[in-house]
Image (cartoon, rainbow, N blue to C red; front, side, top):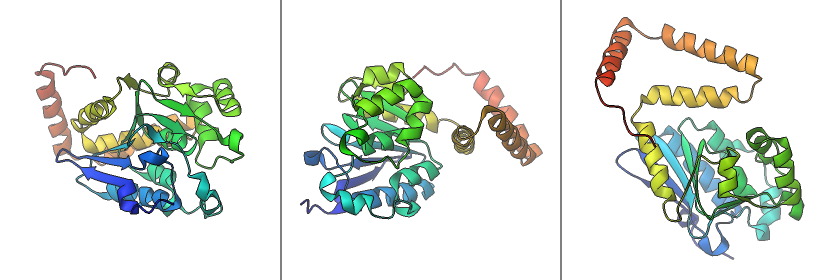
Length: 265
């Protein structure tokens, strides 16, 4: 039994730039999740989402794994708990979080760990990282979205193969399929995640939050309704702007046009 205090198993750090990093820190157990860890992870995501000094959240794991899933020695405690309790559900809290969440996948992302990675907005993976869905192997029914999200990202046939065979998806294959944004050398995953975070933070933060929301909310709809959603939110956004805000927007655009374009990620 792991007697390490839960706050040491889910570590949270903040830097002065506005990046908060959450580290799943149970490396001897490949960062498998106990019920208290899941509750702390959910509450930390909720708190960081409300913290005005935090602009981007980076989620990673220590050691050889991002997260190897639920600790099956405590499976009954986890699976027979209230799976509909949004406040203590880390994936639900990630989906409710308005801030961009970058997953820094440094090793195995297995089952629940795979589901947590799918709740991130952007994924950076190390070359040795592997994504694996073992629900069917162990007789566990998915409840954090893997059965629905993966097929929408990589296609139904690929998702069926990954989930019904429980075979791993390499970082390189995940990148080819559009599951992962960048694959980097071992040990460089956090550096790349911070690089992407810093690029996000250079932009208009109000629009960043609104843009994440309209993309994620639109993904839940068919294309026609999603396009209507974009129109509605654009109309509300511009209707809420004053003449002074339009003037500042024009001045900002003119100022940016006079500068050299920034380098690509």
